[in-house]
Image (tube, rainbow, N blue to C red):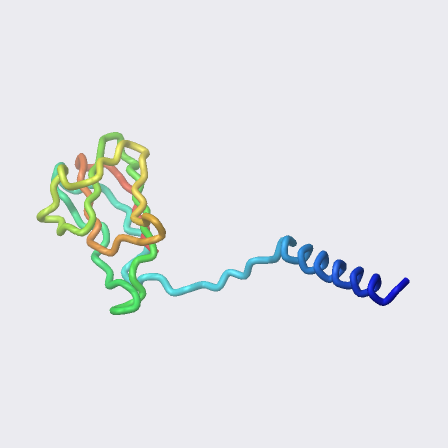
Length: 135
């Protein structure tokens, strides 16, 4: 076999070897990152019908003032419609400026890989439960 043929085979083998390893499944290492200190589980019940109550305070965005909110999730565990407001203080929020949340529906405060950082408030029918967590 000539040197040119051996060189050609060597280049092809190297390219195939690199291409094969590029397509191979590689393990993913997950490194924990700090979440917001204002987070955690804030599940509860609606205290007063049609009166907004704060679920989560506003969080300073990264990197200016802290870790910020990376996401939040609220599920209506009640039987009646709830309303979720973002960025408006509980005392000023209205159902017209809020997102309706049917029974068993969920609200996610992360959109297009950006977490909303404002106050999250909720209202509904007194006694109806909701699940709420932020991270």
